[in-house]
Image (cartoon, rainbow, N blue to C red; front, side, top):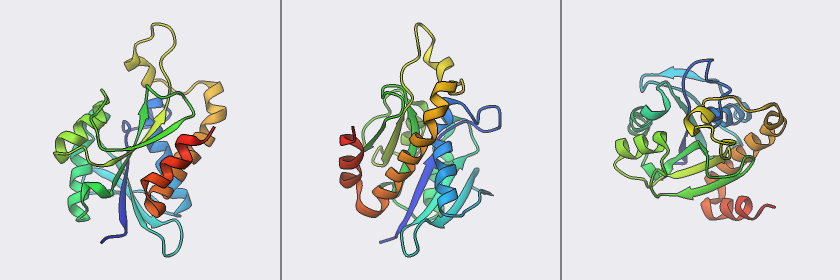
Length: 193
């Protein structure tokens, strides 16, 4: 069995979106790429990828940022799974989650899209929801602010002081899933208090 994992960080392309809450999955990829001393380069699957191992002899990670908008993420992810001959069970998708409090990481395998357009498109392209999700909590918008506006805004200054810890936690979760399995990672991140 392959020791390779495809880790896709969802978000929108371009510098104007880089600091948005919706792009937190791609922010985690930057942390993982730094750990693996890997740099992103464009791939024919319409994604920027970085390949490497975080620990010598450990699993190989293919870190992928689709070059498409969030709601069209599935095409590049599907193409990369085919290119690397990987089953969807070797896919970890990093994405923002409104229904989880900010600064919280939750992990799951399978299930529906929960209203998340990037996950919806990925499931549609793969024909299955059987992949691992690292759900990065961004919390609900304040007051009556529409969710669509909230996710396309940058993190607040208060949130930005905590954000580096959240990115490290999510990156740690990816490493743990790949080395010890999802149940061990869930035990660590779902019981952390």
